[in-house]
Amino acid sequence: MGIINENFMLTNETAKKLFYDFAKDMPIIDYHCHLSPQQIADDYKFKDTYDLFLGGDHYKWRQMRSFGIDERYITGDADGYEKWLGFAELMPYLIGSPLYHWTALELKRYFEIDEPLSKKSAKRIWDICNEKLKGDDFSAKALILKSNVETICTTDDPADSLEFHKQLKKDGFKTNVLPTFRPDKAVNINNQAFEPYMEDNGISSYDALIKWLRERMAYFNENGCRLSDHSLEYVPFEKGDAKAVFEKKLSGAPLTQSETDIFRTAVLRECAKEYAKLGWTMQIHIGALRNNNTRMFESIGADTGFDSINDLCIAEKLSAFMDSLEMDDALPKTILYTLNPKDNYVLGTMLGNFQRGPVKGKIQFGSGWWFNDNRDGMEAQMTALANLGVLGKFVGMLTDSRSFVSYPRHEYFRRILCNLLGRWVEAGEYPNDAEALECIVKGISYQNAKEYFNFG
Image (cartoon, rainbow, N blue to C red):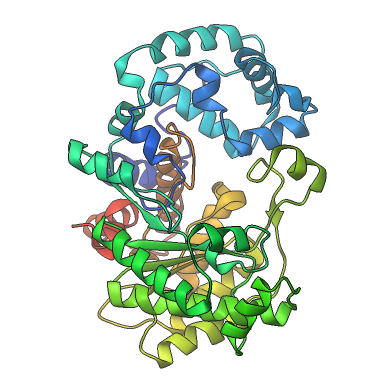
């Protein structure tokens, strides 16, 4: 038998009651993910078990490399079953890993498979999953509906036509699939792709760039967008002439770090002001050190499992950036995520500097992200928020995933949440007040996000 029994990760009686009474059956709002809107619109049918479980999943690829599996059996030309077999051989060694838990949950919830994945069980599980994938109830749309997902926010470039979001709305798909505005290619002037991106979108001046971004935001807003997202090693704050920096970049001259930050600060501020006008939420993901392995980046590209945590100091410039917007009465609702848990208390205290009614928790501390979406990372994030802010108004979990079977991560989060709250109650640190606890658990699981993002 597998590990996913009814009390999985629920180690106290209060936790069990909170999970089953208040958390288990709540709908899912996945307000940040990387699912393909085209695959949803096309109701994509997965080719095989590899395609569903391992295709594009750099979390799994990273651990397969750590297990000594050759790249051919990870991202190379080996067939799907050979890659699946490599992953299966790894699984028994992942004791204590969230990847072990996620995989067990995925097999249990979608395929009713209780057997642990291993070299011994790999072929049997492969065959069972492949047979079920032939059915219509394992298509992209079917998996989303089976997961009780009410709203999905994809991650989309400003230049995107949003044709698939429009198609889904026209088709009347039960789950709301909304775009998220991700202008990293327009912000990161130091990226090699910046100049081609400007050229592709007919942008030849700084003023034209800002005008184009505003136009694209209006278009996204018309198509249901309610969030933006920025991925930054740190939030910059540098004053200067952004127009001059843009012109220097297009002339082919190299930019200094100061010039890069002048430009990024200016563009981020212009975007944030527009978000505030539109009533959007600005998400800022801080602290990833990307593409560390140059040889592998040049071989197989980005987002393939060669990123890690950065350890920069982030507080002072983040504060100055947010303060500059607050001074202009233009700070939007904001979610701050850190990849480095050393900054949990930095962000936990930064929130309180800029909270402002009538929005409850206007500035949010984002959930344990990427290398932190495990029990320790989630508990550390929620404990920091409880110590420093208002945990009861936290907008909760997201998948940040490219996988259509990643939704049990919400169950994983809810079990961890209920277990943490249950420990505090049973330690006498909070009353065993069913009404108050119901409000908190249902809020963090679902209702806070629905209210915060104005999803109706």
